Amino acid sequence: MDHHRLNEFALRRNEYSGDLLLLVKGSVTYKPIISRAFSHLYFSRTFEDRQGEHTWGSYIKGASDSDFEGIEQLCRVLKGHIYLVDDLDECYALGYHSELSAAGRYQRTVLGQLVRDAKPYDSGWNAGSKAEADKLATLMIDFFILLHPTYTRADMVIAVPPSNPDKPFDLPTYLVEQITAQVSFINATGAVRKIRHTRPMKECRTMEEKINNIKDAFDVDANVFQNRSVMVIDDIYQTGFSMNELGRMLRLAGAKSVLGLAATKTAQDLT
Image (cartoon, rainbow, N blue to C red; front, side):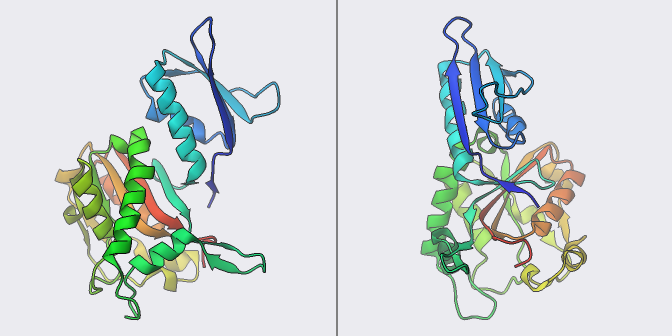
């Protein structure tokens, strides 16, 4: 699975035509993300940067000063977070769960440690911390959701249902509660049900195991999601099978778009 960060960008206004020129060093997959966020503007077809300093560019017509600031802000957000290329309309993680140390071993990032401290674990060694979970919710709200126009326009938010409902609390569900308490989204988690038992995805060692584990595990209320834009929240994104299976069911229920947001992305897909 591909995951990217936008590298560098330049945004400037032509003093004669008033058009904006956006130049990006990074994957062209960011073009539809930016144009979707500012769908009221005209984005030209992409073209190569003749100076060779960037990967691609696009002219933007009809942009106000506010639009200029918004596009610049979104590009900074895309530089700071991880875009996950999957079957959802858009999907991101705030950061990586672990990284290679100087000794060549994987170690948790600061964000990964925050998730570990916040999350209750099945073995019972850690009951989780809602105080740490509140910090995660704040990061999701203040540093991503409110800065990305497509996510700000979502109608409702749901959590990926837990594999074990008996933990002291479920971290994604708690994050959704905090997000919807602070931003005017509908909390629609109650309209999603897990209809059969699944193993924790981290216990599945192959892609096929993960697919078989999660396929047709969810049921959603079609009356709730019809023609709605739905944001799906999870704590750790490994291969994304759970979030994408839920997205598939939401689309079958008539959802207009499905947007994913996880706290962290594992450094490797199956570890």
